[in-house]
Amino acid sequence: MVTAVVGANWGDEGKGKITDVLASQADIVIRFQGGANAGHTIKNSYGKFALHTLPSGVFHPEVTNIIGNGVALSPDRVAAELKEITDRQVPAPRLLISDRAQIVMSYHVLFDTLEEARLAGKSFGSTKSGIAPFYSDKFAKIGIQVSELKDMEALKEKVEGILLKKNVLLKYLYHHEELRTGDIMEELMRYRDILAPHVADTSAFLDRALKEGKTALLEGQLGTMKDPDHGIYPMVTSSSTLAGYGAIGAGISPREIQKIIAVTKAYSSAVGAGEFVSEIFGDEAEELRRRGGDGGEYGATTGRPRRVGWYDVVASRYGCRLQGATDVALTVLDVLGYLDEIPVCVAYEIDGKRCDDFPTTGDLMRAKPVWKVLPGWKCDITGIRTYEELPPNCRRYVEFIESEIGFPVTYVSNGPSREDIITRVSAL
Ligand code: GDP
Image (tube, rainbow, N blue to C red; front, side, top):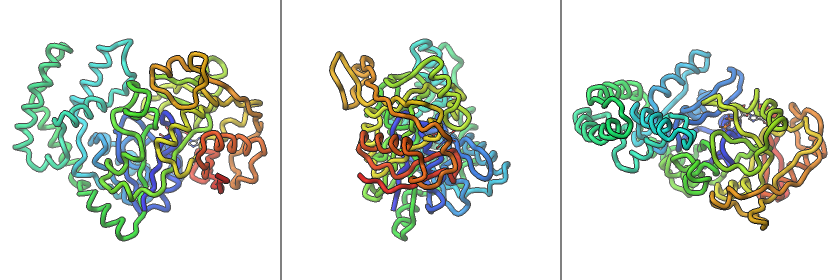
């Protein structure tokens, strides 16, 4: 049985925390897309960790962690994160890396950086982790698969062909020093040594494990609004963030995914540029940013201040629908305890007309939020363990969101730690 934990919004919804909670009941945790460009923050008995590449199951020694074929694999980052967690007393995790995963090369990072600089004010706000050039190469069929590290001779010939193209761009578009085959081969040999203990046919491993009745968690990165097809194109990421892609990026049958938990935050936040209808500014935003998440709304990978806003029903309903949510986890509810009143964006107005379906980017640019204001609960709800004990206005807020998005909120997260989770039976 496979459960997916995915984002219903712009990312940073608290997926890492939900995965960490559920990982204790899972045998396997799988990353299926994205790369080291985003991160999960996880707080547990070992401390607080920002993971960018490793699956969230690494804190559970009995869990097998898999980096699936759909991931943009940065071997140096894998090595650095493994070192960081083991240096901090976490037992060495079980980690398998798909032999079909492809490798983020130093030149992907270089091209990402040069392109962002070239675009200057019109840039995509990339984290410069090489993700867009990586996926471009993958689909242009000049990517390097982990399995290819077995034959360095054949790989050298391939690298020569790749550099022929790359060097034209470097020389004439970016006026940058050209790349040398020898340097790239050295880089690949280093990667081969880092990856060797972990490489496996993870699809076959999963097939066997699932047939034996093992349970697996698919761990998504970012959220629906960052999906290249269904998100706020072009301010999106370069691989699909949807649970449907989980089957592809992990190498399992789509029929195996039985439970899809869409994670949505009790207010909104986004990193980088792009349309964000329910965004707020000024002192109101600063206060929410400061109180938000665990220690403020600042990116787990970049440290950049996140843009914040009130809950967006239109985006979240769409976000849950595209994910195929069987369950919703509403996170960071505790943060809203300081407010007298809580605005919720219940619809958009575009050119004077009400809009309930999340539109394409051009229309989204003209969308204005339609607000409904709910009463706050004015207390700290951290530490509460049952839904019934939550203040009535807090429950009203949860139930209002649930009825507006139309998907069952079965988990309520009221603090950053593993224990801060309330499960409830939805009336939907
Ligand atoms: P992810 O990428 O979706 O896992 O999200 P991030 O880790 O980037 O951001 C979520 C932030 O919120 C992290 O700092 C978490 O520790 C924190 N967090 C998660 N759930 C809760 C919650 O219920 N309450 C509070 N206060 N913080 C939370």
